[in-house]
Image (cartoon, rainbow, N blue to C red; front, side, top):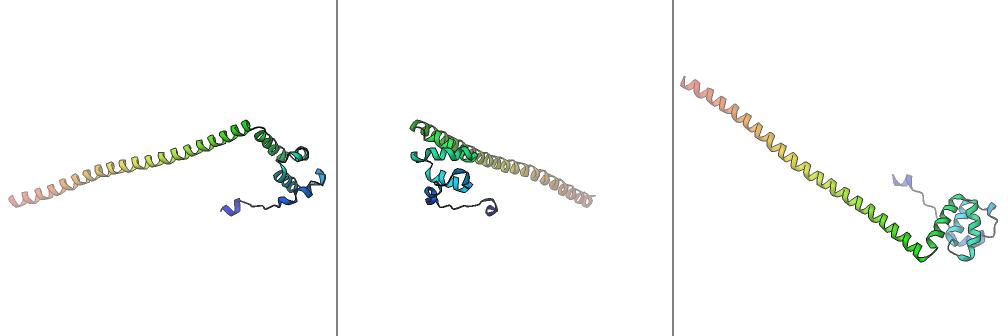
Length: 144
């Protein structure tokens, strides 16, 4: 069930400036994330966020990613291009799988029909031979 797998957390980012007044070692994890999300792109807050990133490993990873993709327009373009390429590759994989499954189904149906016809012919021949024998025996009895 999706409800058991997903947790939604709503946080008020407007309190970030108030939280920034606290020393980093007194901030909770959620308060550090509030500052990161609310002020991560604010050049005036880079030092404070760098200090938080030093104290919190998860924020450090997010902070490094933020710095690398916001470093320049070229870097951002490369990042977006790579992300779009990865999404395209995933789409191609999904489409190819769906096409492969459909092709497999068609081939399976074709083989099933072919086998069904073959079995039907064999069954028909057996029934025909059996009827022929019965008719032959009856005719032979009448004549003999």
